[in-house]
Amino acid sequence: MDLLDRFIILCMIIGSKPPFEVSWTAYIWLYGCSRSEDYMTKVDREIVARIVGEAREALEEARSIASMGIDDFMRSRRARFSLRYSIVMLVESLADLAVAILEKDFDESPESFREAFIKLAVVGVIGASTAQSMVRLVSLRNIIVHRYWIVDDFKIYNSAERDGIKNIEKFIEEVINYVETKDP
Image (tube, one colour):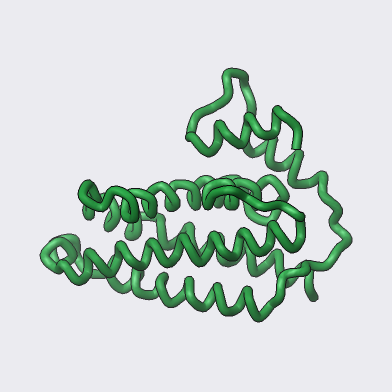
């Protein structure tokens, strides 16, 4: 990875654009398509199934909570804490999956959850918009884990209800598609 690659990824991680015009989708497409297409994944399907199973369990809990009304959600400390924990579990399990793919198939070792999702997009495993949504979820997870006293439960609920659940499902679908395509 050259210096320009590192700079652009850093800009993606901190959520800003570099001081020159660049299309993230074009950048990721260009670098994602530069890898070889004729190999099999080295990621163990059982590990993928286990991690996806953990993520789907947390996703089901989040979906159940998001289906309750906002008033009921805000009145229920159990629901608020359960949704927070589900988000933490989702991010951590899916980041574990991202790291496993990057290490086994691309000899990459990301240094953070954000970097793991961004690198999956760079190598073409997931789309740029999927990576961006996962990076936003990592930010939400970090607020929950590291600064829990400022957690905005309205924001968490709205994020899950609006598009968070769909984005996670899309990530899982793209990763499973990658694994199945590379290990027929």
